[in-house]
Length: 390
Ligand SMILES: Cc1cc2nc3c(=O)[nH]c(=O)nc-3n(C[C@H](O)[C@H](O)[C@H](O)COP(=O)(O)OP(=O)(O)OC[C@H]3O[C@@H](n4cnc5c(N)ncnc54)[C@H](O)[C@@H]3O)c2cc1C
Image 1: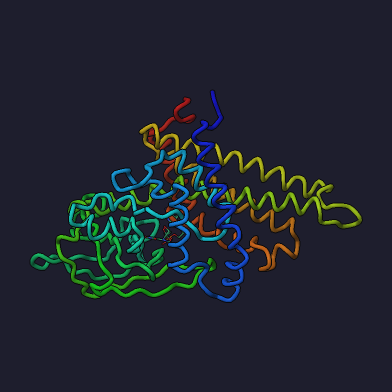
Image 2: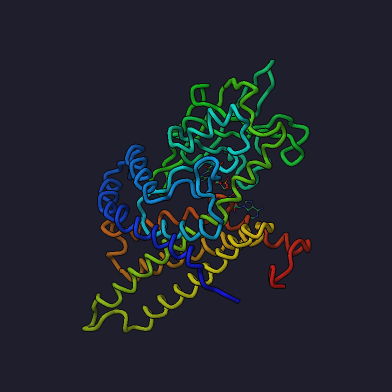
């Protein structure tokens, strides 16, 4: 068994690390200052400028197929890169990306939605959650009624990331109530903001924030259906599936950076005439954090590896998301504790991470939903204990 990275993986990871050190880390103090003043961390043009710089470094479209100018990197490589990105709290992400399900677009839709999204000229958001349907996404109610060649959308979506900035939304709507979501009763629509939906920012404990989207007789032409009629729920589950290994990959980077801060502080902060790191109480927090971090790393890499092998990644990804999200919450909490009162201030990014990572246990499938998936797979015999090594 070989646990090492290939030379290529190391080289790409190190190039990303250099980019983050040179271009992203220097922005951190300004980002903290802006957030303390309730301003956006980065505006759209600043993000775009950084993405174009990254493009010169060779990073553009990590998951985008080469025919669209992307790198089409294997999932393990993408996971390693997400971990590097997690080391900084500056909300930077590489450009040249589009929602995975936008690649189901037909040629006309590709020109209108996919290509401008990849280029960064248009911003998308993905909307399935509703006030009455989150974990139980199959219970959505936003309706699309056929009217001639058009469809008329009515209802509300909530907690939609980028919802306030997006130029268009990928909306999963009920097109056949009788069939239900799992029986082909939902369809995904590409809906321009100009077609008339409204968005309202939702205040959360994190920086930035999602939005609710209101559809009040929004008329959408039939040519704006993404994929097939009846495929909406399936596409929605594919969209969510991607985050199941990228979210915990990002969590690894946050935990690594935060833990290093705790180690440095434990070695330098003195109480009772000695560094706090000589105390077992502090040592155990550091030891437990590293152990959990490593356990999460191998779950995450196995999930990504499963994707690359063309195997069904759902079970491994749920495990990685469940454990990785919990791990980063526990690590950041300990790191805050090690820093005492300083950990609680807004001078350091620790309290920011504390707020940010709480979300990781909620979005794209709560802890409870991951447990539901894992236990169901075992109870029904879909998977064996031990996964591919069983
Ligand atoms: C910041 C943020 C960004 C988001 N971005 C998006 C986005 O871009 N697009 C989008 O469509 N959605 C998005 N979401 C929505 C997110 O996916 C949902 O909030 C999440 O799936 C949980 O749904 P809910 O909030 O309705 O909670 P509920 O489903 O109401 O659940 C409430 C609680 O009950 C638990 N629970 C529910 N059912 C069960 C059960 N059967 N057994 C045990 N426990 C159960 C849940 O785990 C949770 O703890 C976002 C949410 C947030 C907060």
